[in-house]
Length: 86
Length: 221
Image (tube, rainbow over all chains, first blue to last red; front, side, top):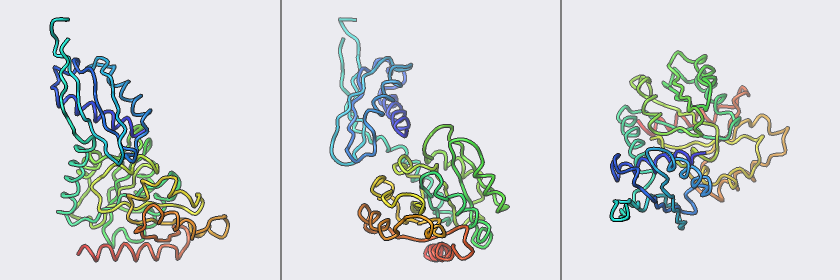
């Protein structure tokens, strides 16, 4: 189950990118995962859903794009900065 | 609601690889040759190391960091064969060692008295393949009581390993295992993998392994 180690690292990268205070406002985490990355996609998705639905996250959605090769990276984050609808 | 997209493009393994590079620098600075020993559970990693420690531990200066999901059993077994510290890492459920655990374990290892370090990984042919621990090379053990097609079933591990040790060779007459097929399967996924043959329970079964270790150490001098 090394997917859980990977999911934990994804959460660490997200936290580092947006800062601890903004973590609850992350709404999506985009990942690129290669076919040869040695990652079981559904298992990684499950681990990410579990971690991103618990504090300090508040239900951010993992969005996994499958690519060729052994790429494994966090490609983007979507953050809700608030606004008129709030 | 105003959603902003932040471009990240950060490799998930980047931090882990940095930690592994730190471990590698530390070991190389101390002049320590390091092998990451990987295999499925029961291939004979601990038995190979027990005999190696008993026969060569003092002559060569061997230290061991051993990882298990639970228990210190392997560390206790190995410690009986050496007065050197055998450092145990209990991963508490994690299926592989990581560079941070190795870095912490090394704090307890006397690197000045060590020329050869074995990191005995958690028995698992999947997860440890993707984690660099700062080793010089991965050595995958593969016993004759397993299927010859292990290399094609677990290609990533055999691709990442520079050496394969076919273990329990003394059992070969009793099992339907083709060495030729096993080597062929391994070379299908890694054409440059080098094979060694060992039998830790046969009196003469370690000669090739010990010759390999001595040759590797000479190359680093």
